[in-house]
Length: 81
Image 1 (cartoon, rainbow, N blue to C red):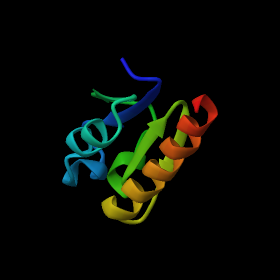
Image 2: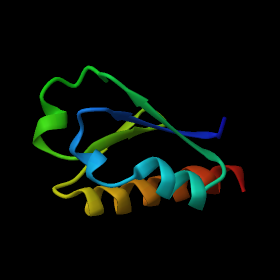
Image 3: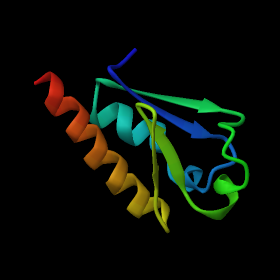
């Protein structure tokens, strides 16, 4: 298990990209967990989002959200460097 946990809802619009493959291959310290529901009712249908170490990250597009997620991961990993 990585030191950065990225949680995604299986109904989230972020699933239009293979987030798990992208992040876990780029960052060995990251674990992507897919859940059936993250209890942010309706958000998954409105915009792509994920939760990175407890912080909600969202954007208008999946690609923009991925970029924000990667920035947050970089910030989290800098703490341990």
